[in-house]
Length: 223
Image (cartoon, rainbow, N blue to C red; front, top):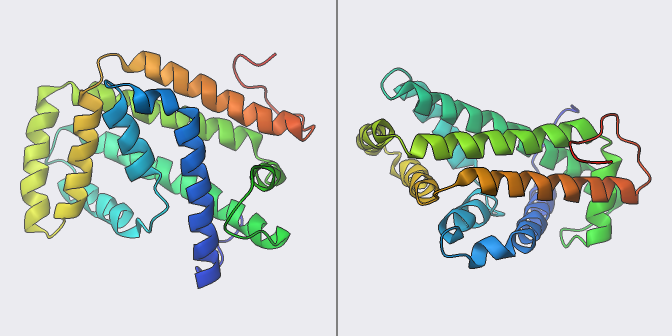
């Protein structure tokens, strides 16, 4: 990956514009989930909290700090899951910043059009990385749902909650608790995960094929 540019004001504005575009795309792709009573809480957590065009640097730093401090003090599976989330976020953030670099190169402003978005998406020429990102999202989704059904995770969260407040990190533990509650409310996550994977791979391949790209590897299910 290329070295990250200095986060000057224009770069940050463009990054927020990119994130806003992606958030609206996700809301459109999963409009049915947002309307479904069972899935609404989880969908809102994804699209309003995880993919919101805001500066979440405090959250990301707090997750790393909390994970390091509590490693060995909470249920091992929970600490491991937090580690996966960190990997996913850093990978996704790196891809976003590379797209912003392309926005700068092409002279695009923060109010991206669909054509502009798809053009810079293809210009990165990273088909396999995008497929990996989708697979990682599905892995995290299934793992957190599995953990949300374990009583020991609820106990661990109470431990984390107390420690986080003592460390002045109440905001991040509230964020984690919100995610836990959203996942726990879902009965069958496998169906949702399968739907998410199919839709994201279809969206990815649609963009790629529109630019006459030939991927190095063909995603599952594509002819």
